[in-house]
Length: 442
Image 1 (cartoon, one colour):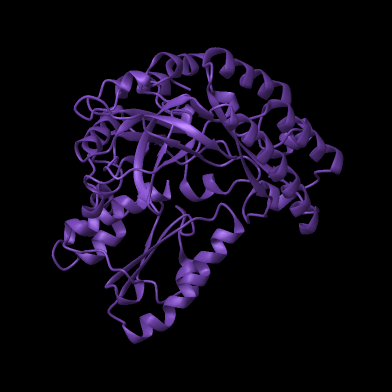
Image 2 (tube, rainbow, N blue to C red):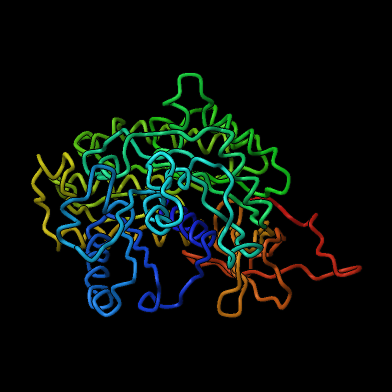
């Protein structure tokens, strides 16, 4: 979400005549877009702000804009007192305050909040920053802003506000504008993306939105994240199965493998519910990859409860597990009511056990691709090799002299590891065309 927000800020600044600076210390405007999901991210933001103090003192004309979840939607007076060198504070997804500040001498209208917010997510169409036009292959497209679920460990609802679904027309307009600028794949974003439309009485749901976007000419692939087990419907799974452009990759966090821990997290499903969902995904979308999130060391988590999480991951054998050690987020229910009683050393031990387990699972799953030919969308060249992804979101590297950016090509997998794979393009024939009939979906 922050990548999408930053892209919109950059586009708005370029529309005013600004250009990227290679060093923040040399810039006329510095935008620090922040995340506070984990303590490490918040600490990093504070560290960067402190490093800019001396720069601001030497160059007082520099404009510093603090944006994102550190600012939030409920005011920033404490931050203003702590960091007086910051000129502009912007809530998540809203470049409006910065644009109003920079243009105040040219247009007083922009000082009105309702007018300035037209620079956020209201217009639909999005002009990419100059450097990305024709070069960006895969783009994030927010469809649900904020969240109203409020898991006990999560600060997002307090920082990004209540759940708001964007109008279908705005989403389609933005998708079309991205495709017109060379984008081949879009990933629909939401804190709970499969709740899209739930806040609109007669609004479409995510499955219906996918069907609308599927008809956009030039759009090759569609993905969405992150889902919640309670809101992933059979209708949505059927849409993924039926629509060729929607990739067979599902991100649906379990967070823990113990019912009591899940209840304390306010996840509102049981381990058996999650098992059933994984079975439904695999039944309706054969060959789909599934990614999950897990938090270790949640307040009160015992060794036995962690073992159930370990056993669940070993049983389900999911493609990806994003792991995190619990950290207290001030303002959340967990911070107010639940002591952080699992020692950090123990959190690390549990983290590493799951990490080692998942590495083996991923290696086993990816090994099945060896010798297979899969369709890969190539995004960019990294250290002399082209990087792309399969429909199931597996990372693939290929050595090739030709420009593969933005192309979907068949790749025969020659090596697999837990985190990526390597492959080769089929031998060219005829006039040099690569025979796409060799593609076999994974």
